[in-house]
Every structure is written in C-alpha cells, then in structure tokens.
Length: 622
Image (cartoon, rainbow, N blue to C red):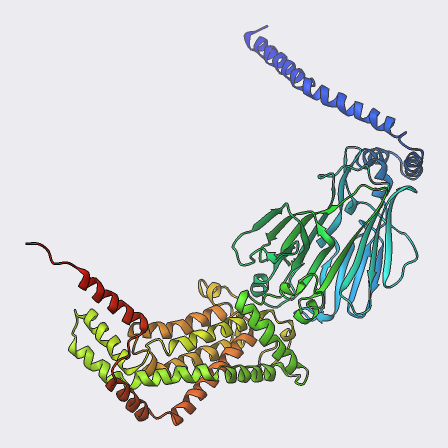
C-alpha cells in the first residue's frame, strides 16, 4: 500500500468520526427532547381535568381522527397542547353576522367574536366607494390571558351565536363547557353611531392576567386612506385618549417618528383611532385601569396610513359571573354629533386648536356656520357670508388700524426731516427724536399693528376649522371639487426634486389667488404701514410666497376664505380712504403737539423721588 492510499484512508476515517460526533445529540438536545416527551405525557394526564372539558376534547379528537388521517392527528395534538381546554374552539368556519341601522353597517365575525368591518352608509371615500373604517384582517380585537400556563387570545378562537340574531343585536359565545364561557353582546340603536358592547365572563375567575385585578383587551387597527390628499389626511390621523375625568390627549401626528408609544399606568376613559374625518372609539363604562398605546406610521406606498394598537386593562373582580360594559363609537368627526355625548368629551376629536383658538371656533365660527347651513346649501356661498360677518365684526379694529396708518402717513415728511437731521451713525439720536415726535403727536407706532394682531386668533381659528370640518367634505364650488382638500387646475405625476416635496404635484388656484391678493393688499398699504419698519418691507412680500408653498396642499375652503378676507380688506381700505380726511388728521396732530405733554403719574412719581434723593444728599466735607 503506497503512501497516498494510506493518507486517503486516514482522511476518510477522520470524516466518518467527525460526522458521527456532529450527528450525536448533544446533552441540551437530549434534555429538550426529554422535556417535550414529558410535556406530551403531561398533556395526556391533564386531559382528565374535568369531565365536560375532556368529553369536548375527545369528541373533537375522535371526529378529526375519523375524517382526517396521518399527520393531521399530530396537528390536533399540537392544538390541544397550545390551547388546552379551548382547543375545540380553535377550529371552525368563519361566519359573519350583520347589525345595521340607517347610518352604519357592522359585521361581526365568528372568529374572535369581534367587529369584522364597519361601513358608514352616508359617506363615500375619494373613489366614491362606501367609507369602510376597517375590514377583514386590518383589525384585531379580543381578550388576552393565561389559562393552565397557556397564553390565550380570544381573537384566535371561534365563537357561536348565543341566541336568535336580530338586525340590531347579537350575542356571541365562547364556551369551554356549560359552566365556563365568555359572551360578547352587541346592540345598535336606530340612527346611532354608538354600539353598546358588553363582555360576560362565567366561571373564568381562575384565569391568570398580567394584573390580578384587571383583564387585558387587545385592540389593533390599520387605518385606510379615505381622502384624496394622503399627506393632508395623514396630518390629522392620530391616536387620541382621555385621562380619567381630565383633558383629552393625543399623539402628535406631524412628528417625524415612525413609531410612537406611551405606557399609561393611570385610568383612561376612552381610546380613539382617528383619521381626518372618521374615528373608531372604545369607551369604558367607568374607566380602563391602564393603557399601553402604540402608533406606527406606514410607507406612502401602503394602502393604509397608520397602524394603531392599544392594550387596555379593564377592572376584573374575579366573580363567578361578571359583566364588563363598554361602548364602541364608529362614526364621523362631526362636532355637533360628538357634542351629544357630553360625558365623554368626544368633541375633542375634532381638531379645533387649543385655548382661545378653540373657544373662537366652538362659540363663534361653528354656531354661525351651522346656522347658515340650515338655509343655504352652497358651501362656497356659506363661506362668503361667513367671511363678511367676521369682517363686519372686526370692522372697529380694522378702522382703528387704518386711522393709525393714516396718521403715520401724514407724519412722514417730518420723519424724513429727522432722517436728514441725524445722518448715518446717529441712529440712537434719531430714534429718540422720532419717539419724541410720536409722543407729542399723540400717536403710538404700534397703533396700527395691535388691531391687526388682535385679528390673528381669527385667522388661526380658520386655519384649524376648515381642514377638519366634515361639512365641507366632498362639497364642490366653482372649480374646486372638494372644499375639504386642495383644488387643482394643473397636476403632474412625475417627481420634481425639491419642488414636489415643498409645493406638491399640483397647482391650487385658490392658493394662487390668496397669494396675489395678499401681495396686492400689502402693496396698497405699503406707503402707510412699512415706513416705520423699512427693514420689514422685503419680508412683507416674502411671507405670502412662503404661505403659498405651505397652503398649496391644504383645504381649498381655507385658501378661499383667506382670498375673500383679502379682497374685503382691500375694499374696506378703499372706502376708509374716501371718508378719512388726512388734512384734518394733520390738523389735530398739530394741535396735540402744541399742547404740553401730560406726564403720567408714574413719571411724576419718578421725578419726585429723584428730587427727594438729590435733596437728601449731604455735601462732602472738604
């Protein structure tokens, strides 16, 4: 035998030895196999738990053996190992039951006994199809607990109708046996978006939960896109919740975060999965004991906007027979409708702003808008009349602002003289002399600005009102087909770097008209308003262009309102100019300048204190 043959035999022997070593079960693997074997024996022993449950399991097991042979008998064993006494409920046919009234269609699935889909009959999406808040696997709902050391989720188990099914109520039962079961009850009243929901637990007092005094509800929902502008709708799609007997809080929808999460250890009254105009809300009769909330933003290519998830704890007293009462709201974010549920503050789902902005919308804008809607069907005309009413209400402030600007205009020649008197390098002296001139003339340089600043809350209130007003949704006016979203006269599909991101892929005519009218208004008032702040002149023309980029994707009802407000303001200033005599203003200013300037009490006190202090000073000794 030559040298090469001996070397080959050694290599083959080494390979065989290594193969045997790797194929021999390790100690951990042997222990794992032994544990699995022991678990199977334990499952067989635990199959004698109760007579009723054993009978159910045996019937299910025997039935499957008779119809299915081979490997499926193993899957049945796995199901028993996974679900224990609930194994018989882990198989079934997904059957659907419908509850409906004149405004909502609610479909209940036998799998999980959960709401399977919700359709709002009075609303259509941007494709003119019925608005479906969720459908199929886009939602999960159920109780989660441990039973005999097994994690159980009722969302995975099959319920059976508990009684005769009506069009307005249904009961779904998940039964282990006659003495141990869970019943979901749904009830829907005519004309209501609110569903009465309860969970009855019988013989379930020994289940294991995360908190011994609470039972966990797991609720998840993928929010579909309903509106034409995904970007705009996404800004108002968020997860809302209300702390017990406190204010409503929410996740900031405009934050550039893919995932937002909040663990709330205190009581929560309700949780809402909200998009721009519609919401799904789960409400506790008293309060949820705790809440773990999560919001996940989805890619723009996805058909859903966001994924919302809530883990909610409900008080659980562990009685032999216990009923937990809840409510479910599936409907539009309509302020007047939500206001009817006074105890819950659901009206806060409508994004009207905070503090004074919300007060203006709630107590001024919405009442006027609703009153006009009773008599006028054209919402473009309603916005026009609403704008006129608001401008009439602000007329005193507008007039005062114009008078202040007119006073500044007649003083301009004297301001120019001070500019020549104090050349460059003496800006401080010039400023002091200018302020002294204003004081003698009895004019405040901020007199024209303050009235305008007082009008800003109205502008911000409108900024909040129009994009969230469901009354404007899919209402057309002139070229705008939907006043709740942008109007488009030119659009394109290709992505233009920078421009598409900042401006969008369309041109909104109302936004263009708003920008042009704003620049024109500033141009007409430039001679009177910008002279006291010449450095702001350029900014006055840059701002409208910036707003054009910002508002191009916003509600056309909003930009239409701003356009109308600008046009009316230009008209008001023209009328003011016809009735205001600048020569008379100058004469009154000269009269005030001739009078001695009255010192305020505060100034008089300062001077008196200064004299007293100077008089009390003792001369220094030489």
